Length: 143
Image (tube, rainbow, N blue to C red; front, top):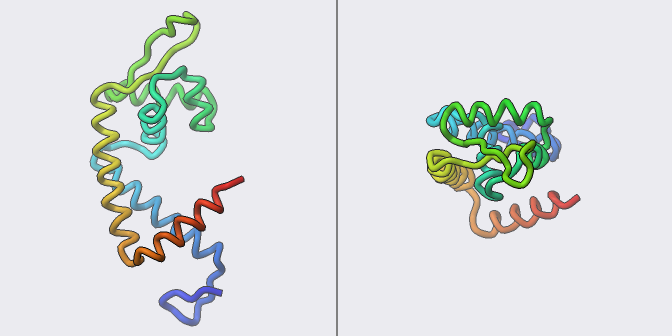
């Protein structure tokens, strides 16, 4: 059992992990707040930033959400000038989605804010603890 600040309270490894995950999600929401971007919108922007222009169906696959939900996310991004749609020149029935310059600028700004927030969050860990935590998390990410 793990012990937090209250030595009378026992906490399992799983409970401690989820408590940290919740705190990181809170930090993520705080980092996104100045830009009024939801986590799902930023996930879509992040995919487009990493992988470039793609069909909406492909974006849905990356996000692991239904195509209908992807349409809503892209609608919101397009309304805000962060992404735009264009017909796929290879298939007139398909639609491509790409980031606008404003979307790319937002990605850079949010990533900087998130990095600063996570650095503060992990500031209590020394270099060895950070290396150990990174190694353990990478191992747990494997299927």
